[in-house]
Amino acid sequence: MPSSDPPTCPPETALNPYNYPANMKETAAGKATETGLTVSRAFSRPTLAFAFLLILGCQADEIARYRAPRTDEAAVRLIAAIFPQGEKSWVFKLQGPEAEVAQRTDTFTEFIRSVKFDPKAEPPVTWKLPADWRKDAERPDRFATLRLGPKDDALELTVSHLSGPMAGNVLANVNRWRPMIGLRPIAEAALVQVTKKLAVDGGEVVIVDMSGPGGSAKMPPMPPATGAKPPTVPPQPTGAAPFAFRKPDGWTEYRDPKGVAAVAFHAGEGDAVEITVTRLGGPAGGLVANVNRWRMQIGLPETSGEEVRRDARQINVGGSVAEYVDLLGPATGSARQRIVGIILSREDVTWFFKMRGPADRVEQQLAAFQAFVGSVRFDGKGGQ
Image (tube, rainbow, N blue to C red; front, side, top):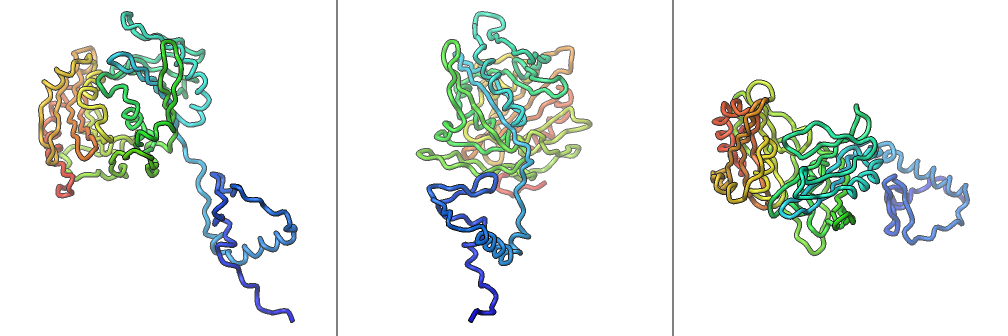
């Protein structure tokens, strides 16, 4: 005699459409795909329909609470070419929304193949611009800026060069760029996933190609690297500074729109004077390369490592020794720029404390900046 009891639901793992067997995988679209599994076609449509209704009846609560993942997150893509040229390395970097950069990858490759170097010429590098590309106004912190596409909504490609022993280090550059697009640094063994070599006139260049959620997105976990110890990097910024400090009067904290700085301030009236604290894994290029990068930002020429080390002085920051530099830009028609920077290596991480702005305004904030840096505590015993 048929039982009047309601049908007993099978175990949850047998019915849950999100619990796939071990030999199946879930795609980005949320659908299961076969991995060596032969699916029987013996089930009739009525049988499948009954099974589906049974799932709905037994797991209505779970289905009601299920929230599909967002698919409208704005992904960011970064493509760069690194040209080693003697003691310098030239970098051509394109960054923007994933879909827009994807439309430019072939053109980017053609452009990179057109680049020619002649250290005896002026300028020492030339290229052939694609049809809808144009050169933008000059800036002191880079060699050139190129605009791609419509004038009102153009992508930006930057051309710059660095000097020093780490300037052409692919891993150092990749890990310097990854936080800009919302990614964690990687170990050297993982470089094969984001780099390739491209044959060009006179040799080969390294092409870096990475996509991420953007600088303001939550950082994904670091991928495992076989045969190499990953760099020790603290969690990425989540809005609060990862160290204790005392904020000087008249400083206004703001969130870095690029998502690079762990903490950032404007000092005094307006936003002319900017203070940022940034962290990168490993040596992050070292003292000489970074000081020369700062020099270029305020219109100064690069200088020798000997001069950089001679002008830098050592100070104490949070119980560790750091390098302190003070750079004054040339007097030009615009406001003379000044950068006061501190580079601190601590526990496999490099910290950059930097104040930049018009020379006279930076001078007004110098004592406050030094007091701020002196108040930094990584053990949490300071205070805001």
